Image (cartoon, rainbow, N blue to C red; front, side, top):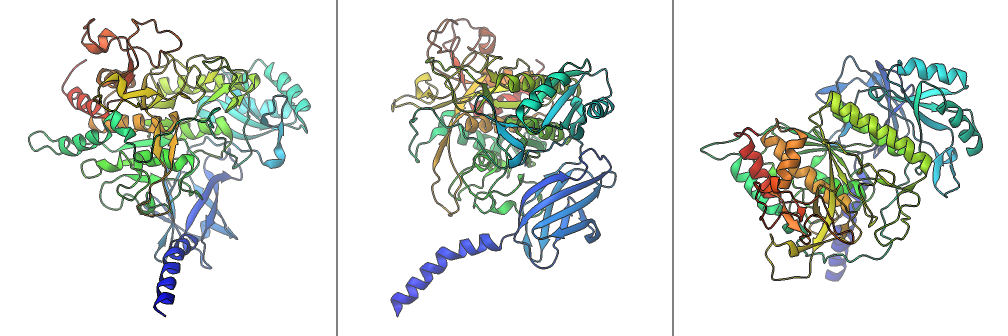
Length: 589
């Protein structure tokens, strides 16, 4: 009998977390539906797991939405909102004691459609491409919507989506296959009012590509302290002590961070306490995201590096560690409709208009035919020439708009994992763009040298798969532990520049919370002035593609030509970067 009791207890211990996850209320999808061009009266569709018989309360920021504004069909809720009566805010559900994950609902106008499984095809390069959905970049001298509608009428198409600040409008073409599409794209592209036609190449709806390495790559052990190479813990400790310092306290600013990812698993202990209202009366870090099925997905790991709960096993969030001293951070995980690169840009535009200061872009693409440093073709995350040319125009328009309308916003982008070059604009996007509002991050991992100090260049080595060259601004630890469903469990190690990028995003957000007046070029300067080094010293002429980042210049070392760091590549020092941000409050540069 005692054995049976023990066995029953063990079974219950195993099944309870599963039961809790099944009973949980989770928003899995939130997208604009109906007429995407409608500005005032908007319709939103939610896919929800765990709905009971009664309709739950819908909360949008401080407002409770009336039941009359919601229609239910099974697990789908259809919500009607008037944009004049509300503003962008987190949306969540409440059903008795249960609260769902909060998802950011942006009432701005940039929304595009994703293709369904029957609306894509394989092109000649073997890549999945949208058949009848394309986006037009209209010349700025024209009213974008009027011109898009004129062209749609001329070619028997329909305007179905838009990114109005960029004068981009999405059309559904009257075509049945790629031959018809390409012929019509050629005709539309010759219109004098059309700057570019963006052809989307990505999997339909939920498909997600992985940056799988071409060759098996060495991963550090689970207990390897990769983040020590960037002084992660030193930075958290410095922030916690310096912000409330008795003699000269700093009033930290609340900073909004946008993370262009699909979703986050709120059933993982790393994110479980972000459910419901946040902030809930006290300043703290908040996470707004759609719910994922698995804890070790790309979005959970990237967002976790910023915001995961401490001491729960799995990941550890940099910004979360500052909650006792900071005024909190808003981490908004958003990817619009999942329509590839076009949706990434639509989401980014909405987030910037909603007040985001830092955007985390842990994504990028290569052109078909791109070769790595060894001369082999890259076969992961590639796009055709026609798609790349459209993306390049779209990204250029985004950064021109950013410079003109939001010059204080900074985009942090991963260099990529193709063992290739980040700065070749004909082969790699978006990291090849030259603008002060784009910081590019490469990846490193711990070397096998045991006895060297942290600030020694030999403490780390470039991760073999990381893209390189002088367009990379700084490197950071490429490996992190994923979240898990078990409390105190050690997550699997995931590696890539995708996970180096949020380390830089986190420290930039913390720097801006200390001094919100910092401009993008000043942030880059402080990051590189504070940086430790990686790699050899090459007198600015590295051989064999060993220019891991732009070399550290004498101007970044007090104009000391003989400084030992000059000519080497830059490695993130999170603690010193925060220290320089504090000093910048009192200095005129």
